[in-house]
Image (cartoon, rainbow, N blue to C red; front, side):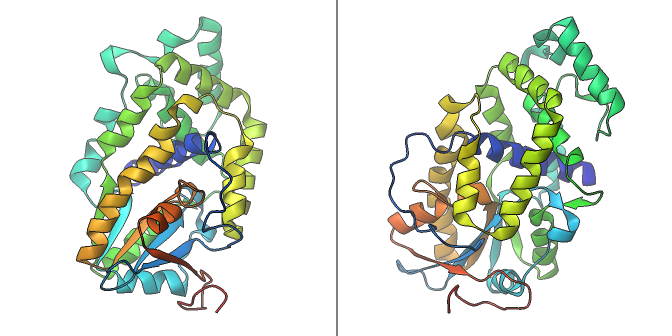
Amino acid sequence: MRLFITVILALCSFSNRLAAQVAHKNVSHVKPVSAGVKSLLWEISGNGLPRPSYVFGTMHLMCAEDALLSDSLDFAIQKAGNVYFEIDMDNMGEMMGLFKFIRMRDGKKLSDFLTPVEYERVKKYFASSKSILPLSMMERFKPYFIASMISETRMPCESKNGMEEVILKAAKSAKKEVKGLESIEFQASVFDSIPYADQAKDLLKTIDSAGVEDSSTARMLSVYRSQDMDGIEKLTVEEEGGVASFLDLFLYGRNARWIPLMEKAMKENSTLFAVGAAHLPGKKGVLDLLRQAGYTVRPMKHVPGNGAQLAGK
């Protein structure tokens, strides 16, 4: 069970990380609703909603001591009738089908896209590092999935967790219905849009730049802890990735696809949406898209023990 959760959270994390690397392209300098705000938890109201709903920005993989509920987030869980994640983490049937979707098509394997010397570097890395699975079991995985699983081993702590797991546990304890905005099949298909050869080269870069990657992970953890929406958006535009042509696929397109689903859910019942924090800020982020759709979005304090209060109140 933990292995499935790990792979799923790593998938979400790497998907958002790819989106982060290109999130600054083609965006006008219009002040977003999240500008200057430090909060991961937002209330959604107005536009005919019978009761408020909530959206929370998660970090899919982090140190366990940081993956904690606040009074405000617990309040949102208790008030919500449904809890939506990016994928339905409570659907074991879907989760069990994960490995079917993370394999490359046409029987391809990693060594098909690397030179013998390059592949030897990958083998050496997995032989000397602590990995979730041996390379022999991941040979046919899409290279970006392999890179995503490496991310867990680079966290600066022994015990890891994700906010999704914490929220899922609380939601199930409160007997809330858990749903997903996307399917695992859809998320996995996103990676088929990037040539496997390019993915393999990026995997090699990830392996060859361990120090840089570790530093990037530390910065990501720091800015997430600060709950700084501007900082999160800034971090997403710092690095140049090789996936700029897939901007709409990884971030903006997914955000836009979610809005009608969110609206339908909110009209039926109070709902908590827990999605990667990178999806929230910016002109094409979930928060601004909701505002453009006519809703009022307001930040809530997300500090353990402070209860459900509007930020600044």
